[in-house]
Amino acid sequence: MSKSGTRLPTPPRSAPQPDIRRGGPARAVADLLPDIGGAAFRRFGFVQQSIVSRWAEIVGPRFAEVSSPESIRFPRGKREEGTLTLVVRGAHGPMMQHVAPELIERINRFFGYPAIAKLAFRQGALAAPAPTRAAPPSLKPVSAEIGDSLRAIADPEFRAVLEALAAGVATSRGAPVVASAAESDPA
Image 1 (cartoon, rainbow, N blue to C red):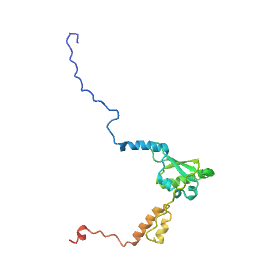
Image 2: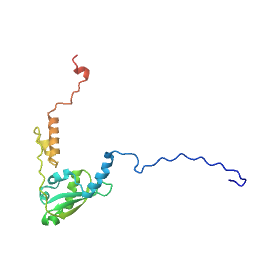
Image 3: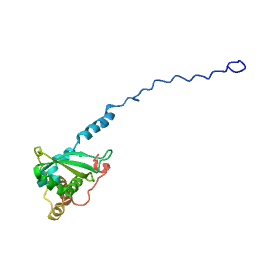
Image 4: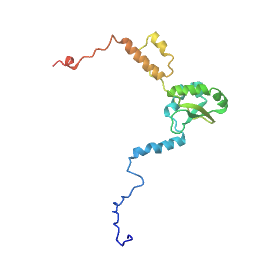
């Protein structure tokens, strides 16, 4: 009430607020899995299957006999400059520490970017070595000049693909001829 005794008008009431759900709108399980799976993979140091199965190709047979990749840990939110933990057999740890810069270079060449910045070593027994894959044979023999230039390629599968491509190019005659649909239709 005012001083004069008249009633003041009451302000209009706003519409009642709907219940706000704490979790927000429903989300698909597939949207949640990267977060859940990522935490589990970070915890257990998930190593890509290819680095484990191709370890002998990456570091060479001498180092593959005495070491095995165990886990890769990356800085939070990054996929580079990680730490690769290796299990090393017996007293080979000092030798592996000595050649660590060369191993890091080979591993990063395998990944194609600077994925590993540091190696950590743990002494232990190695699991049975992964079976090595034989490179697929070339379909046709490659000329000596092309074969010599491909010897520097370390990956045998990639080398075989390039040899097959070079052999295909060598056997072709000129540029390919592309016929239009009207020319190829005899109707």
